Image (cartoon, rainbow, N blue to C red; front, top):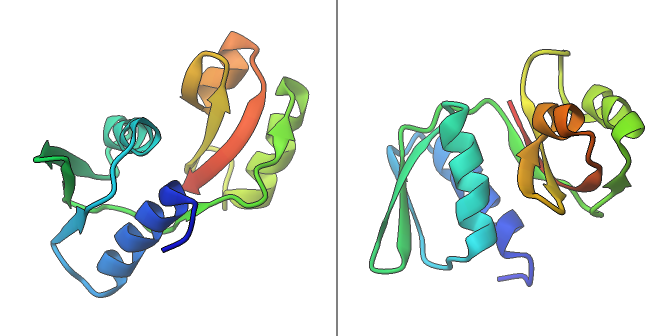
Length: 123
C-alpha cells in the first residue's frame, strides 16, 4: 500500500475491470475517495455504496481511469492543455480537479473560473 489512497482506489477499480469482476471492495475510505467516486457516479461511470466503512463498487463502465502524478497545479486558462494531454477526445472523458470549492470536473471548474490541482482522469 502506498501513501496515495486515491491512486490505490483507482488502481483497484481498474484491476477489477481488467479481471472482468462485477464488484470491487475498497477497505480504505476517505472523504476525497468518496468525492471522486461521487463525481464518477454522477457521470455514469460506476455505482457504489458504503457499508461498514467499506466502499463496494458495482457497475463499472470505464475505459480508462488513472490518478495524475505529480499533481499538477493548473489555472483556468491551462485546463484545455491538460484535457488534450490526458483525454482521447474533446467531449469524451473527465478531468477531476481539486479546487477551493471542492472536487470538480474540468468543465465545472472552467464554468466557475477556478483553477486547482489535477487529481485523476476518466473516460
